[in-house]
Amino acid sequence: MDFEIKKVGRHEVLYVMATEAEYRAALRTRFKPLICQVGPVEAAMHTAMALSGRKVDLVVSLGSAGSQTLEQARVYQVSSVSYRDMDASAFGFEKGVTPFLDLPATVTLDHTIPALPAASLSTGANVVSGEAYADIGADMVDMETWAVMRAAHKASVPLIGLRGISDGAEPVSEYSDWTRYLEVIDQRLSEAVDALEAALVSDMLQPGRH
Image (cartoon, rainbow, N blue to C red; front, side, top):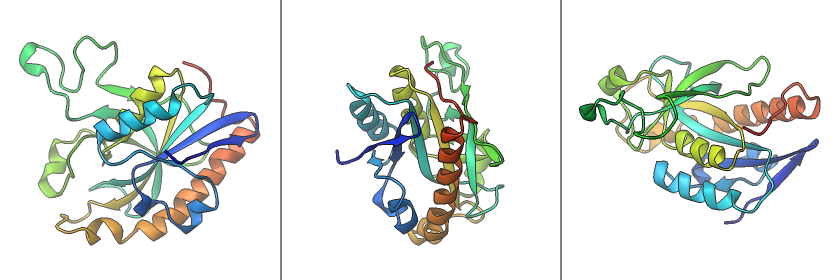
């Protein structure tokens, strides 16, 4: 895996993205991310491998997300994340709760970037479109952040999530429905990264061990 742990002030930061398609010109001037691949399984595996044996103070999961209600192409920080694929309710567990794991269905992220709008996020292995949003109890959807969060928490490293809204206002039917805003999102994510790193350097955001 070809990536860097970036030194930001006194903090060692690992940036994680799903695909090269989201890693464009503006972000390429800021960091070299772990490309964890698409979906919860790949994201958890690659992130866990990247964290093994390395000193990391903060993991940042960033990229695109879908939303039917949030402003398209705008960037939001993740206030909380849930796992929509998990459903053991037939055995009496709350939907979204992984049996025998001491975590709620929705996990609040502890660290925030000043002045950046926040939204809740649902992670799962499917592309959500159209009427399927009615079953989502979160502001936006992606396919990796819950998995990255679990790998980070297992390594006792906090997580920040940053997502640009690439689609969702209209039902999606082809690849270009996802990619049309990625250039704009790349620029706006880079501005959010600048704000994050400024907060780290000035200790306005202080990631700590869980």
